[in-house]
Length: 507
Image (cartoon, rainbow, N blue to C red; front, side, top):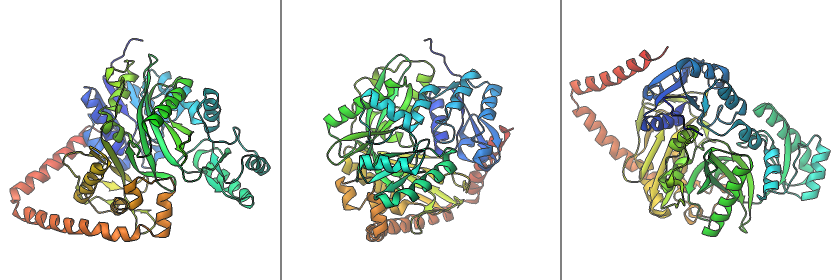
């Protein structure tokens, strides 16, 4: 196919992923346009994009999920393509079809591939046919609790109920004994309906304490599909990832080759193109099972970029333009080690409840091997309307130990005031003996938090941070006092000028 160069991309998202796509577009010389809700009018993506357009009120159902309004806007402003980021409409096959119907390129997989992999039951059937190992379990929705009991009896307890149309732990229930099944079945269906609009659930064998390993793939429209190595994503709280790293401390060269081949086969089976992630469970005996495929860019893509030297967002745009993957995607080898932590506005000392508020002070860490992907600035407001993720902090080193040391340094330099954050959790994890040894599984973090095993580490790890923060605060206060009124006025004027320019571009 003949490549079609984009001149303008509409970014249908917010926060740090919108900033990430803006930067990739600018690197390619492409005009970036971003949408914003009323709550995000003054946020960083609006200030950085070449163009910014209001899309609706704060609730996402009235703004970022308004598929037809977004596509109408793309056509109206002359955008060649839409990048959905992750979340919101990123894995919505109907949205991808709507873009295609209106002549706007969708920077992601074909809607047909998205739909087939978006259904967990359909994807299980496809993977079995392709020879990709899957977790033992059913391949159809359970209509009654009696059907669930029959399937559970066939594969043996413990089992896990899962929503066919969802993810992120919603509609998921662990069932260890037969007497727990009925209540778990009803709860899973109810939560699935509330979260995804469909109450279909299915059942799988529960694998005890597995690792969560995912393989990043990239595929062009010329038949080339490549594996870009694995990410270790086992550190999760209530099925939500909090820390990811590449490579996994548990994956050998042979296992990496076999898992990569399975991921490529999964993508080829559904005619997949663009960036995608195939997720696996890895048991303690080295057996791996297909879990699901995420048909979009992942939150944790920076760790893969750090160890491969590739720009996955630029590659996404180039593939969507019809370009073939370049030679840099041939025989990709990972070098060094990268670790990412997800920064959330939440209180780790009070059951991680969200902490909305105004970011009154922000300093992002710098230095060798440190990358900050954030969608906030000083003055940003963390609202109740969206996921409270502020951004990601990524550390790279020659090996895992070097990456851990650099991440400790970066967390010590990081300064976010006005809201509570989960930084103390990471300070604790980076001192935890199981984490340091690479002894991880998907239940580890929940176990340690429930038992209080991390509590002593909180105090010990925070001691150095408190001392360093106090010293930095002292120096910064002296610097502020020494600054002249003229300098203060100039800083204020610079910020106000930026704000006025952003508002000028808005309708």
